[in-house]
Image (cartoon, rainbow, N blue to C red; front, top):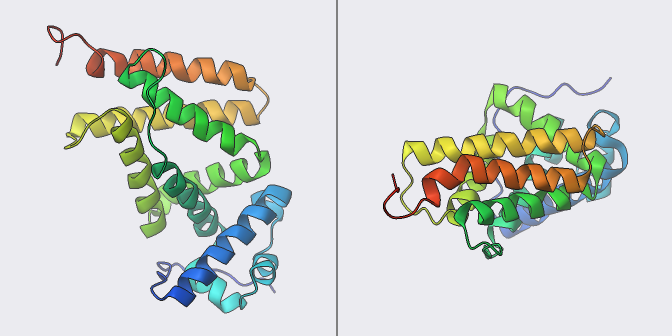
Amino acid sequence: MPRIAEARQPAEPTSAEQKDRYQRILRAASKLGAEHGLERMQMNDVAKEAGVAIATLYRYFPSKTDLFVGVLHSQIQRLSGTPVVSDRTGTRAGAVADVLIAAGRRMLERPQLATAMLQANNAAQLQGGREYTEANAAFHRVLLDALEVGEAEEEDFRMVRIAEQTWYGVLISVLNGVLTIDQADADIRLAARLLLGPRYDATEGEAR
């Protein structure tokens, strides 16, 4: 009988050995998620691929939702380590569009994994949890850095939340075959310009 995940917070790795196991689990989930997606991937297979006991897997990731949000978080962490390069227009809105387009294209290279991460992120919104909260905060910080915002105000957080939600919607449209990648890129640039441009790229006399 499949193990039913407990409603509890995932453990956090602290030692070097635990962190190594944690990363092996994330790599295994990325590989198998790309092959099978969220529903068809089995936690037992992840544990086997990662070379860990099933109890260890459930200790860090009590459910597949936790696991794929963890994969998403690891991708965001890599994104946060990449310097933000302004686009050819030199605008802050354009810099955010560049970040979102680059991140989206990387995700779309493995459509089944991208779908699994987005499904998990949607489910995690309902239950919260450390992994979701940290992934959300890390992504918002990446976008705020692109906007050159240091001490963010509540309005800044609203702006990046809306940009993030728009980006998720565009990615889902690509995954569902509604948009091409080029159309998605254009939509993201337009959304960033309309949403963020008036606040962050206004001339000095028009600034907020």
